[in-house]
Amino acid sequence: MIVMVAIFMSGNAFNAQGQPQPRHKRADKKEVKQEEKKMITPEKRAEFMAEQLELTDAEKSKVQDLFVKQEARNKQHMEEIKKLKEEQKAKFEAEKAAREADLIKIIGNEKFQKLQSMRIARLEKENRMYKMRMMHQAGPGKDDQYPMLEKMKKMRMEKMKKEQEKEQ
Image (cartoon, rainbow, N blue to C red; front, side, top):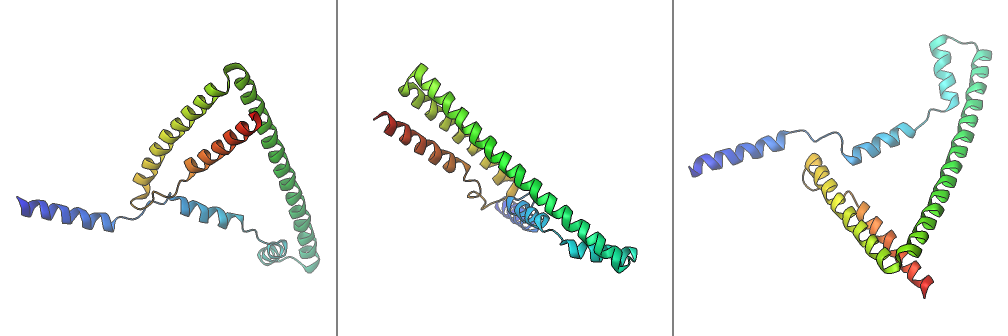
């Protein structure tokens, strides 16, 4: 019986070592995103197009100018979008602060602190469940990848300290 268990355990160990790692690891996703961000320069794009389509030098320079203009427009659009996102984030934060201030006026600071601690407890539970799912998918040794909870706790604690300082 003991020999059978030992054979079974060693067989499982060999199978686990031979299995490929899942492709959906967080590190892999970061690498893919970084690769996607690398853009080909307008010059290289024009050069490639000239080779593929056998363009003349005049056509190639016009295409290159067009690509340069497009790249400049795209950068401008991206900056506008970034600015809009920052404005939206600031607006959201201001609205959130106003909502919390109104809630404190209604229920009082003590009950608001209790609500915040309940929220943190819920986030801890959700984070534990999420970590367990990710650890199961990613395999052993991946438990330090998701520091979301610590970041949320730190933000909440800083906010609570600021509110307490304002009250005093």
